Image 1 (spheres, one colour):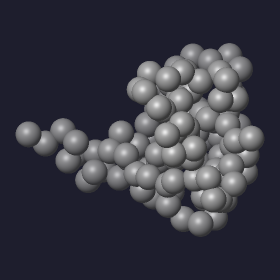
Image 2: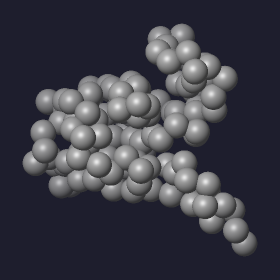
Image 3: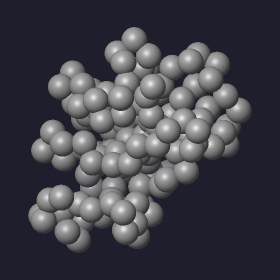
Length: 126
């Protein structure tokens, strides 16, 4: 069975934390989400090690990232991620990291998960 969680992708490698559905929270009805946050895992967690020395000192939002949740209504995993990650090879790596099968995944973008500076600027335009 697949898992939920948060992730980053750097140099084609998925970094993150996966959790069993039973560890998730249903903060929004019908959607089971990981209790983990990107900022806490990146900056504070003692059980998450960043395996690339060049990322030391980087901010969590500088690396393309995303989140896997589960929809109980549609019985599918929804992967929200930076639009730069929407490539087949990256989707395969994410699927493997979370133990997801192709037919049970819905791939989405989300304005919270962007690294393109123009997209970030648009978030803060009045």
